[in-house]
Every structure is written in structure tokens, then in C-alpha cells.
Image: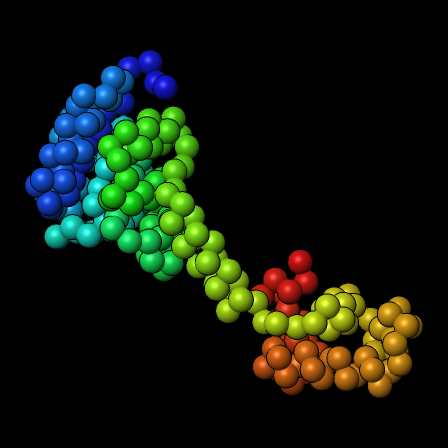
Length: 213
């Protein structure tokens, strides 16, 4: 924990929930509540003015969303770290939250002690994700990887790698113990999967999509 109390701002447009979290933060040893806000624009202004260590933000706020505030804080290189609270953990939303700079993503139905503990962890420079958010982020990464990287077989990848290294078709055959016809077949299949029609384009696309890593 830091030597001094962790200074915390909370922003949520639901007063009952906001007041409950604010009370928990105020009563937690080592945490100091320095401000509250009811919308994203007010939260951003308070972050600029108060420079809290951690801002606990509802992900769906009027004016600016929690993710938009996180992005603005990152863009302005402000020292405040962001903990987002949400009622759901959609794959794309969790991914966007982390990419835009959030240090934590918890569910709003978690108990107040869990939220306070997350604030302390984030103040120490750690990242905190609810189990649902971890699952959502993993799924989003897998989906994006699948879409970003064409599906080629291991053998086709080997052929592409040797092609990128300047091997000719016959040389690739010798290296991989394949007939020239089989090498040609693997290359043609790779061309179709990559959406290209020649060796140079195949190599360029394979490099661009990290197939040769």
C-alpha cells in the first residue's frame, strides 16, 4: 500500500449505489474519498481538478461513458487509474475498456469489500478483472485472433516460411521431403486461404498477419 491514503473519486448516476460505494470507501482504512460525480463529464472535470489516485466509474454514465473517461485520462496522461464497474461483461466492451486504459473491471453486484480491495490493488499499480470480465476478455482475444490470422495448415505455414526465405519450389521439396507437385499444391491452397494469386503477395500477407512468427 502507498505510505499515504489512496485518494479515490467515485462517479455513478445511480445515487443509491453511488452513496453505498462512497460510504464503503470512506470507512475503509487507507482510502480517502475526495469526490463524487453523477455523470462522465463531471467525473472528467473532477479527475483533472482533484487528481485522485483511483477513479471508480460506472461504465454507463450520461455525458461520457466510463470507457470514454478512461480514454481521455490516458490521452491526457493523467496519473489517475481507472476502475470500471458494470452490470455486465460483454466481450467487446471488456476488450475496449482495457484497450482504452482501464486498470480494472468489476461487476456491480460484487460486495463493497471486494471493490475497496480492488481500489487498493489498482493504486499499487496492479490490474483487477472480475472472473466474468476475464472470461469475456479471453473470448474476445480468441475471436480477434481467429479473424486476424488466416487459418492455414502447419505444412502450408512451413512452405510459406521457406518461400519467404527465398527457397524455390524444388528446394522446398528437398527441405521438407515433399514432391514438387505436393509443394505446388500446398502453395496453391495457401494462396486461396490468403486471398492472393502469387508468391510475393502470399509472403507479404503471411508476414503482415504474423503467420510466420
